[in-house]
Image (tube, rainbow, N blue to C red; front, side, top):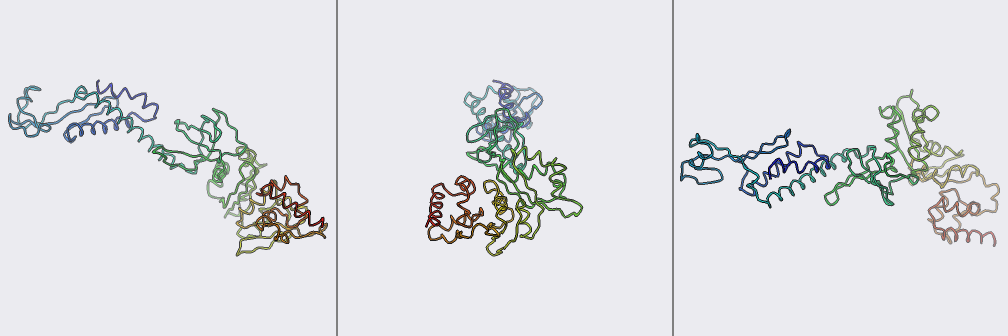
Length: 413
């Protein structure tokens, strides 16, 4: 088998693995040098010439010509009588370079060379992919859906590198078919069993941040700073923005004229409602802005415990809580305070009982969960349908049934 035939036999593998021919030649030289060391004990008196354009490789062994009978190391020296058989004008003291033919390598050596070449190329490709995507962590990539599965979506990039979008990193309303174009950020890159694993995400706050940077030039240029982003992927998001230039309206710049800038992002996030809020270091003002859907009467802040008691009219409570409790939960995460909603007036609740008075029958953590959604009295809990209580809280159905039973028994008594 000729050297060129050996190289050409890997051309198909090279194309599939996306490795350029020059790199393949360098790897091939490394593999042959390793073979020479194994065969001759050294490679320092061998020259390997790689012709990238022709895809050819030649090996030459260099030996010193010595007088007959004075050869002490056949690997480095050759007798004068043997040298003139190769070329009759050689003289003692000159260096002889003779080609090493592929026929001198045995079948097992050729097989070993092939296996080592495949292994080296695979290792090179894995390291290259890992490094490439390690530098892209936090960046948006565009790929093609190769195979949608129940637990993940297999995506390929323009170089046919495989990427994974797990179910946990997908928006609930995401539905992709084979061949669809998909946008996501590179969440993390890991080496598992010596293979690079690239994980994508569409639920990370960073994905929304990158989308805003792409749509809002003022953010990309640093004129507007994103202070915080919180999301309930596919449902709602809150973004706190700030500008140090008084001439720039950070909220208006992000939203755009008639929502021109934000609408594309909302569409990409499957209808996710995005509240853009002007950041301030004052927690009371920030809480009001975060709960902008509701009119707040007063706010009591406990700095030590990072808690805020918000009082508002009864008809504003549901607005503050939001669908599924998303609004108040996201507002709490955005400002960094645990927000509890209370009614400012108790008209119609004269015979009501504070929920905290039931702490001898209901676990405190259950009471706290209900207070978070604005249900601070027995009647405020009973006024809501059970399904709504299930949606707004993280309580189990059995727990809610028991709470309702206890509260109802209070008024029946």
